[in-house]
Length: 491
Image 1 (cartoon, one colour):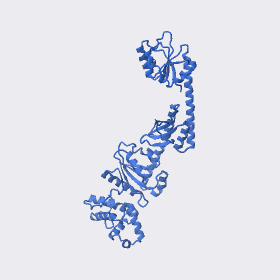
Image 2 (cartoon, one colour):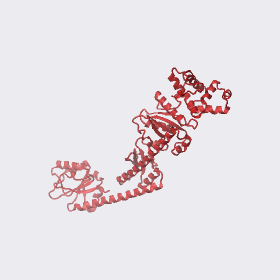
Image 3 (cartoon, helix red, strand yellow):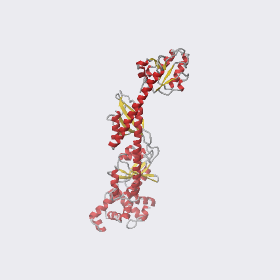
Image 4 (cartoon, helix red, strand yellow):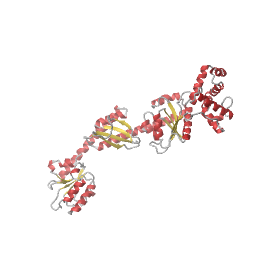
């Protein structure tokens, strides 16, 4: 774009800079001839104001005020080509021009303003043509990138090479670089200038550009065009994540209602990046967080593996990888006071519903002890005491024996009877297997299943103590019958 400095350098125009040297780098967007006493009312930012001086005041102080008002209009410069009756420019005006960094240029009246205007207009039109051509190449490059590169990082790299810039998309909430092409730290230093431009739309993101310091970015409009393209791209990705969340919620509801077997859901989870050891989460979201719970799936930290999410009354249920970073991110970003209960690992033997029950119980315990994240069984430290009331006995039996009773009901198994027999025989494997009429390996399998369901090993002193006290509490309060299967236990 044409600058005041470049305009002065055109020999045929024979322009002379009188004052305001420090402002000659301003761009010239148009040329406007005006002899009215208030030209600032008629010009736009970047306009080159051309006058014969007939509308200027003659008193020095009034000239300074006149120039100050013109400078406030963000005009690029004043070109003064005086006629015979025009007042002279005072020294005070020229001194004010230096202070305001507002160029004042002398021109010969013989130079027709139309010639000066033509030169400015031709330069502006050439700049616009260059802008158009560059924008057209940008859109063509972007269209080609969409065909060639499946990933946004690849497309951004193509755009960066086209513009000769380093580019990144930055999350404004946590400052995380969502995508970047830079091979160096994107921060200002002696060699590079870094700028951030907000990307409009729902995306909470900035476009970060890094260019070499000795080079100027010729056209900020081009950057705005790029921001517009990336805004569309990010919105498209957000729509995809919204759809993925809805599909994930439907799958989670299907698992919750036992309409889908967990083993059959595994391949679908793996395609979503939910692999490895999986857990259920029961989340009580806080307030004022970086990401509300209905938008948390858009957080860049979860893009690689977004948990399945399902609001259920006042709790947000989730199925997630057992990843401490993910848990801490959710707890920190869902707002102050967020609490998360984490189940034990989801296993085929225990089933999804049991894991969800564990997560809910862990959430309740986390609220009671004031802990932000609590895993199932973590709060069980030390030797438990015998219950002193029916509610305490019900809670004790539900905590330690509830998973076994639920499993026995749904699978017609005998885990609780097996546990009671094992403890009644003081942990003697041979006698217990004989009393139950089962093979020793069957007993081993059942005890391992008990451990998976409850998170407590029944062959350790700690496990024996907890199970024994729970069984005695159930018997003494008639919560358990002879087989340990009283329906009121889970009520």
